[in-house]
Amino acid sequence: MFLFVFSECKTNFNFNIGSKENISTPNFPEYYGNNLNCTWQFLSSDNGVYLVTFHSFNIYSSRGNEDTFSLWYKYGNSSGTYLNDLLMISPGTVILVPGREMLIQFISGARFPQRGFLMQIERHDMIGQLCAFFFFLSFFLSLFVCF
Image (cartoon, rainbow, N blue to C red; front, side, top):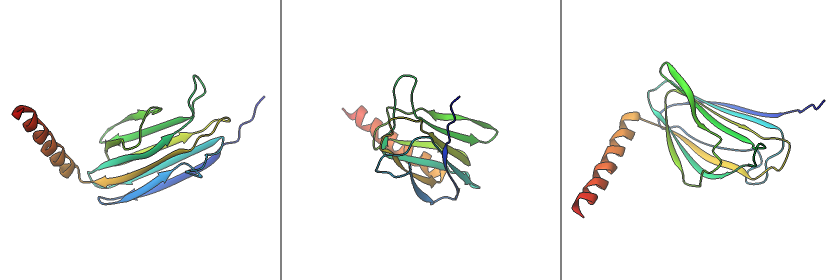
């Protein structure tokens, strides 16, 4: 019989539009430890979006022996896994997560720790993000049409 003792790291954030926070694996940029179970919960009372920017992402992956990274969200009456086991994410990747609640979880196994991850979480007004998206989309399409 094997007994695994998980070291826990858990943080809760109350976020409003304009809030910003960096999160990382323990000891980043050094190697994270074995048997970690980390959760970061973000809660907001506004109707904005979470902007998640990955600055570094390096977790252990080998067939059947992965450390796991998951991001869940709750939007209105629906909820689900937005991202799961992001093993190929690159620095600079940005994602928008809708809703008032977001949960990020990282679980490491008992072998081969890596340097982990560093990401920035920001809360933005949803209308402002949609306007910016359509502005850049229309700008891109106008370039495409002109050439």
